[in-house]
Length: 471
Image 1 (tube, rainbow, N blue to C red):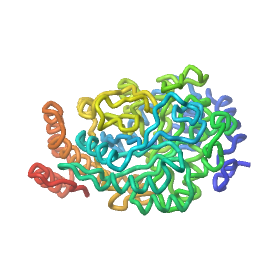
Image 2: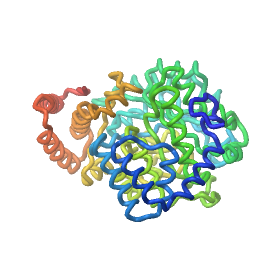
Image 3: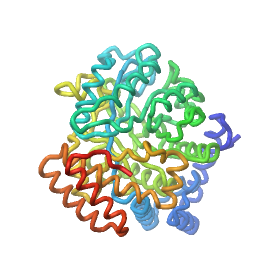
Image 4: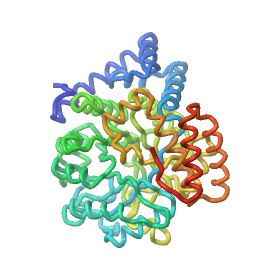
């Protein structure tokens, strides 16, 4: 029985409710009056439930879909402006005891070289990432209690935070690791992590169990209930997502939104971020083996629906997607991008960067400076800000600021200041020129005299060599 308040996965992600939702959407997809009312609600930034969202997904009316995209763009602009938060993944280990059939890290893959970074290796990787200009990392690792247990992860987080190279430092470490215990989530919280991220892969339990035939991850309920344990362990910034293409995108979008409704109902705050990756080529993985491929146009519509359904939630797209795809997704609501990414173990410090240990092939291989330059060309403001996490603006405190639109009073100045840091320390001359011109326009446009004065003074301090002046 469907119960969004239940702590049990089979009740807050209820298969019969999803099937009923899909039938409801199919039956009502030409009800223009109903769809217009849903879009009216979305336009007021009141969010949507999973049934309303799936009805929009099923709608094939061109005029209504154009309105959907327009609302998504407006919501993105209202709450996030032109800011795009930058990050990079850091792979610590690809040892894994699971049998996930879509991931090249799976236990039976004998062709992939297995590696685990030592603490000295991690220092070299972090130094290389700092030399690119990154301030925010998402650490990734296969699930292996011996090679990448919690003690190793905690030591690695401490190492990452300890590396200070020239003007560089990693100010926020997000963690994308396997489902674990409430006690371990408490330990991660005490280690000072930012967001805990875990993708569901697919919410269809039957498909999930077929795709995860062995290993700890094969336990659907334990995996699906991980965010509950994380929040019980004190982590109030969590990030969820599915790997579109493993099951039907309709089913997984419904499950994804039901998961956010559950977290909101049970803990008072939904996810900090939602990720929307698609299955892509990897070592022994061929996307053609999967029957549920998601075309670019559909992924764009999914992103727009997530934006109107969850107006206050960040949305992430990685370098799995091409430059063209990422550009289209930015237009309808994406707020975070990776740049200059490597998905192999040790891929940043070593020449070449790819040794066959990668989790997936990268579609957007541009260096970070080129991504920053491209964002500026398209009217976006690359942000390297981490201040909210370090100043306690997390969980319901962050969401209350977003909902009141007051977060812009912090985020806009911080985006400008951290971009200025990047331009001073890492940017190519062409990118620096573009960025400085953009910053001048942004400062000139600040309406509050107090904030304008503070930002102008901070920019001058950054030019004199000061760093980390976020508010």
